Length: 105
Image (cartoon, rainbow, N blue to C red; front, side, top):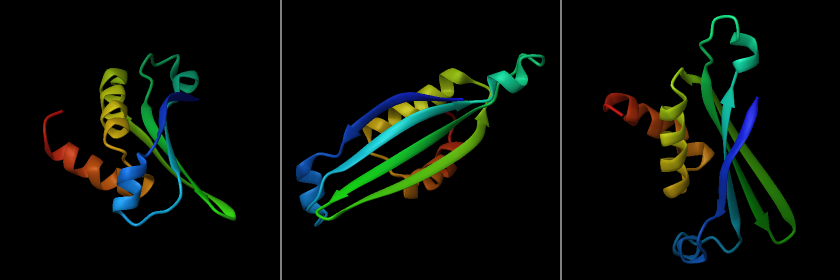
């Protein structure tokens, strides 16, 4: 199951600084397999990030699904909050998660 956590458009100033002339929207979702693990009472959680680029004559959608990160729903929500606050894109998500795993979260 996928639950919407939050979304935002990247600030125009940041886009222009990076040389991007079109709007970009990021959406963050919490994924869970609660239905499959009701008997074990240990749902597994992951995340999904969707980046939508609204170019002049085209719309480009990029998605990253990372499943089974943790059994701790609160930890997943902390990660999603941090991702949203820092405009984490699908491309950079795994690198950031690797760095986070080296730290105590």
